[in-house]
Image (cartoon, rainbow, N blue to C red; front, top):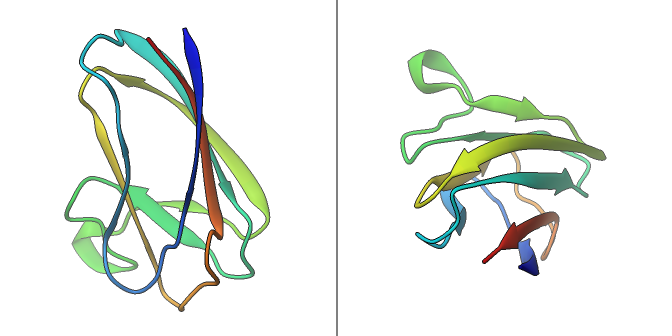
Length: 93
């Protein structure tokens, strides 16, 4: 297995955080929000409010979830963020 570390900038448009390799069956993914504003994670329709409001990852916190092969995780922020404000860590075969 290989550990993958990715830094992303998340702003007011939906951003793809990561797509896992199709060989990976299940793996834990850690999303760390290093910014001063919350981000919202979900699928490609994720929003900061309304019917498509995503799961909140508060500022300066880390959220862990289990994902399957070819899952894509997206994020959006209600405020612009600094470069590399979101860090993603996971294991990929």
